[in-house]
Image 1 (cartoon, helix red, strand yellow):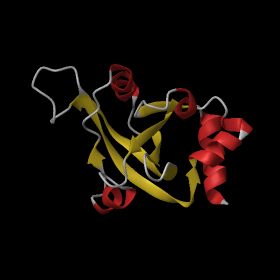
Image 2 (cartoon, helix red, strand yellow):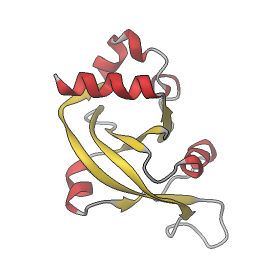
Image 3 (tube, one colour):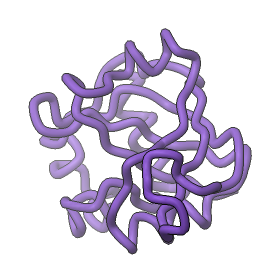
Image 4 (cartoon, helix red, strand yellow):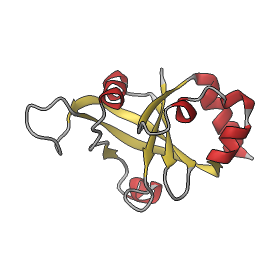
Length: 136
């Protein structure tokens, strides 16, 4: 199992909307590196759901429900893909970007090194560290 982080602006597609809809196809990714990450996702992989821009915090855990498939929002024949994600649980406490930056266990987290990328890999120990911060 791999771990990931996806970013969404809460005013465009929030955790609350995601859970109310009981999941979604993660469409609209138009960066080749992020697309490559989507292609690597497998059903059962766990995903940190990050509210970007205004909130800047991990707010929940999602799960990959299906392999990457052509993105229905892209032109036919384009290289863009989407995966289906479903919610697992909201974190008891959001984990802010400031908390992530302050935690030595997360110093190599891809979110800090590739901050503009919307789909990022997360090492298992980093995933566990974020969950520990969100449990406090």
